[in-house]
Length: 174
Image (cartoon, rainbow, N blue to C red):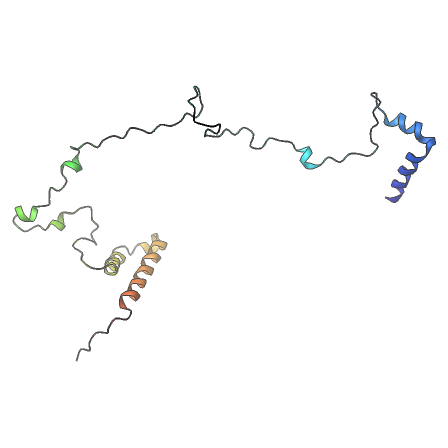
């Protein structure tokens, strides 16, 4: 390494070699080219346009103009359709409300509620009792929805501790 640098230094500083150097290093335009190879850095070598070909789906040039032939036109708010008051669920809403008054008394209004899960029908109680009923009805969750099952049991445990903390014990049954 040291020999190569000394050789170049001697070659350039020696006046006898000046004519030889200029004739070999000059090209047709009389420009002196460097005898050393220039190092091209990676960021100069790889000039590219970042995200070339990407077209944003939003307008970014000031206020919103109405440009004809825009590839992504400005979306407008759709007109809201008014619901039909005579559709089936609206027309039959509340049809079983007075079944216990007008009927013969054999049917309870809670029996006609079809949209309520079976484990919630005719239920009255607190949240913990409701979750215990739900756990009994949804026992298959422990295999098919394990995280839901874990969360349900955590909530039951939390409510059990909360409802039974600092509560007077039951009187002894003699």
